[in-house]
Length: 157
Length: 102
Image (cartoon, rainbow over all chains, first blue to last red; front, side, top):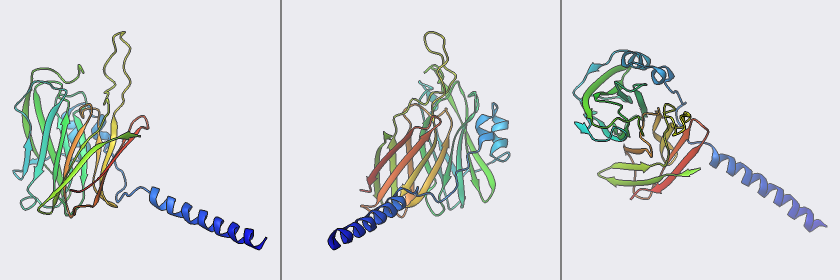
């Protein structure tokens, strides 16, 4: 009897501990709250999209924006954004916009402090137009733009 | 839960993460052969973790290409550390991939 009681207690304790551990492990390791700039994403023009990000950015040479001059397939256009943090420190956000897309806002990235500002991805480009890389540093917006010519539009699939 | 293909390589104190996700990234503006519109289905949030630290979190629209590729770099990673990438889409789907830094 005594033994069953004991094992019962330890089993309960064990289960309690595993539940606690499980809760700790399954907690999302998130440092920041999610804040999707919805106004920028639903905007249907480049000016409204930029306004959704907080205003009109000024051109800054520390932003290195790499896009193809000519994209044969607008559905898959590789882009790369790199910022020289010595010339433009404290970058907290990087955004990609495609001027002539139905919704110009393509992606926003929140960057952790004290790390590299380097983003590579692929976006859809509906037709030949300017692509914008917009970064936020110390609350100010800066950008670099590049034109990509598209031979086959990005919205046909 | 969809698996994400992920690689993380460290050199000179900088870790480069490359992730490839499987996702249709439907804009909601396309129609199928019968003319019915295909509902929007795209990744809305993506995040990169180094251990417990978030090194990048992103918000995506439908303009990110199908089967999205993401490349990011961060400081402070050591060989053997865990790097994880996760995503959530507008229909409640999720994806996750984990690897150790080489």
